[in-house]
Length: 345
Ligand SMILES: Cc1cc2nc3c(=O)[nH]c(=O)nc-3n(C[C@H](O)[C@H](O)[C@H](O)COP(=O)(O)O)c2cc1C
Image (tube, rainbow, N blue to C red; front, side):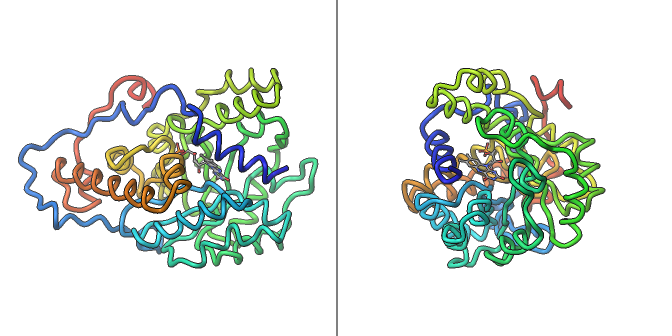
């Protein structure tokens, strides 16, 4: 059942080592400025992302919904998003489409003044699979359920391929996407494997308003599905999870491939405010954090708030040490790219 699957994802993401074997943010160094001429207390971190104002250039990436545990997590995340003035995505809202009684596990976000609310559905479910494709009415329902600012459509075909009950059909997705993007402000989102330049061009032609790269370097859904398959003793899927554990385009490389025509959300493997500063330097408008905020959200609001507090503090320290008084200065900071990422870019 979909609810059990979502709960397993949370537990595995919290308890197991599910990250890719290399974090590509480590291949970027921001060049130190010993004479920065910046007052820490006057640093401006606010940005506009499309038409939304955020106090810090970040969102909490889509993670969950559909269970009581997910409702608690979404409540904590939404409360923190309000407090810090940052955006928030909900996890796939398929559960609420299939069972109306699960709507409140998502709509709990409406109890908070979150400055940018992102609804979420999966690209595979926009096509007919074993089940029929989501209808226009169902899409309208998830969008209005949370009075969303954007609709994230997640492209998680790797996960679908390696999970025991995955959807297999990806044919026709650009046509369906362009129909939906005609009616809603769509963010095309990956979930840990990144978009290429060619994909970005196709998505932009289809009318998406922004791209959330969700690249390789952080949470690996092949890894999560490996552990699920291990639990159910499915040796074939375990092997597929292992084989594709490190598949994808590194997050910073994906930002470089996709940037130019629409704003980019830099995500996949962000662990702290320094990683966020690097994402912005390399071309993202804002960054997205998923797993690094998950365990805090589960354990309680205090832990989550302290984690976000440290993240924004690290961002500001990185800004001061690169001579950046505002986010746009960070984009002009000097950086050095080494290692595997250098080979990619
Ligand atoms: C437990 C968990 C559940 C997730 N569920 C969704 C989802 O429902 N929809 C979605 O678009 N992305 C989902 N993601 C993917 C994240 O939004 C993000 O793209 C990915 O985890 C990479 O970011 P990270 O390295 O910061 O975790 C999920 C991630 C985690 C850890």
